Length: 131
Image 1 (tube, rainbow, N blue to C red):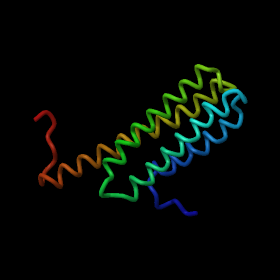
Image 2 (image 1 turned 30 degrees about the horizontal axis):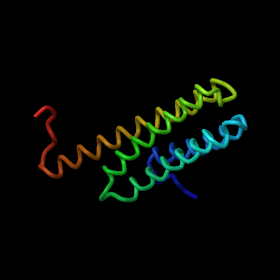
Image 3 (image 1 turned 135 degrees about the vertical axis):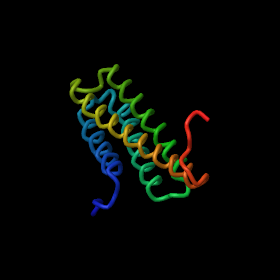
């Protein structure tokens, strides 16, 4: 499947799904079916929201706001898994955390651009901060 025409955040979200899938395979059996399942489901939800935001231009800002929350939820679950010692190493946790940080920054930039564009379209000029 050719995804070259899709935005970098789409590829990054897909990468997070694949990385979480690989990571969960090595999570201890005790955590694999609890925290591991939650990580997998949340990563897939993030990917779905990126897809919705990319395809549904009418509701793009709503999808991006939901995406920001979904990324935060995934970070929270990842942190909980780390504190429960679910990962085989800190490096494994850190790699996923770095990918999520990058994804969060991309989401924030995209949301800011969409909101700025909406402000320009509605008023005919850029929104002014603070008033």
